[in-house]
Length: 153
Image (cartoon, rainbow, N blue to C red; front, side, top):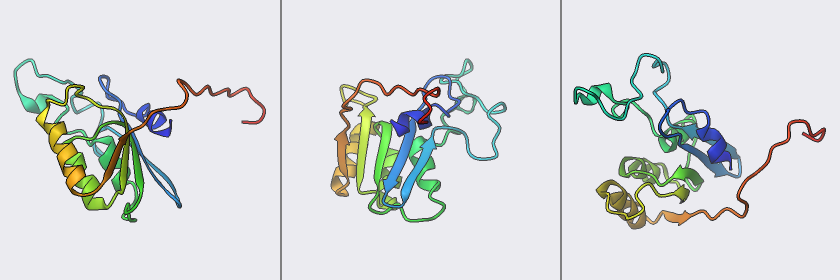
């Protein structure tokens, strides 16, 4: 649930992805967005460019949620931590997950249902080879209501 709440912070109009690293010491969040100090108003959020220019799309600029969560550890170790993410990580995120020492990835949605996209097949392969546990999270509840009027909150 916290990964989904974190995703709400993303300003990406097409896809909001959230991640959270969980350890005994606490929870660290991340969401997809532009690098710190880079204006959301000056960089493109487009998935495609009308002129075919890849620099007019979000892809060369966006930092993925998983990477932001790992970087938000402020150089503390992510080793042995569980990473909850709203979408299955791409191959580039898988490399960073492995290098950071994350022990388990729990995802909610796989972007390519048929697993034909080489990026996600490579991600599965890398995580498996590195011994990172991967599993699809099956929520026990369909929704979590939040009542801000409840005096216990």
